[in-house]
Length: 383
View 1 (cartoon, rainbow, N blue to C red):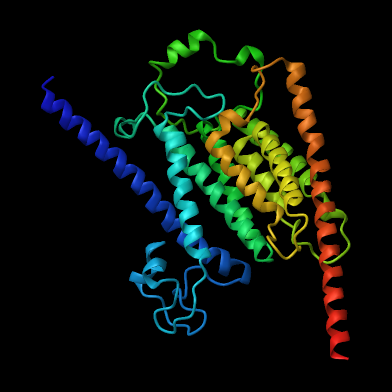
View 2 (view 1 turned 30 degrees about the vertical axis):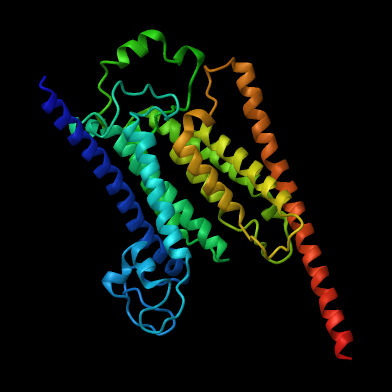
């Protein structure tokens, strides 16, 4: 081939790669902008589409040019154009987080040809040109499936961070969409419920995968899909209960750490990812939760008041991006070792959650004690 044609082709492919990456980030930031509206309005029972976004201080509608994700906040320098009231930096942070996740998930799923998906044999080719050739329809569908789960869990975590109750319709819509699409699109569940050592991809499977067409989607009901969804819901319920069990026994005022609805996020995780991955998410979330509480144990409870759902969202993000390297599946080790590891993870979840709750309670008690001392000192000085 002529060198100029090769150079032109490489430039075109590079341009396609850049355009696809930018498009993913922009779409993610746009959805993040809408997510800010959902986080604020949905718990209050307000309409998420009307009225138009406006300044909460002067109630002036925000102009279209000022409503651009991230850029609008930067151009306004974090202040309302009319009354100069400060605009929380949380809005561009949410937009950037969703945009970055959409971009990273695109590289992890579609661009890589499925190399980070647990159990699935990756495509022979990778890159944005696979989209044009139609070799990635299953990965694109999986990408959208995972993005929706991430957006819902992130919104729920922020709602709990604001000390609001997660709206039931947010969870119900996620459940209905996840169950209905997962039931009739088997490609959305690359990890089946039942995996044995014999089911592990062999060398012959790897050779055949080089010519296998991965891009098609098969619409139709399959019993295996129903079993995968059922086991995912079952284990999601177990992990959700074990992770948030301190909420069930607390008799005092609602805690900032464990709030109602956290277990539902793990149930949805089991529905979307399967039982093998929800066990991993629950264990890692509990582990990160107790580690965080140990690090901030000497600070006041009002500082860094992250709810337990925030750690579910963080670990879920890693699981969606790097699931192949975070999830141990049957066939990768002996059945006995696998069952021991999974059993230890399940047993460790309530222990770690209880330990995190204990540390948090000590932080609360210490904060109240310090406040009472401050009040007594102030009274003494006043007298």
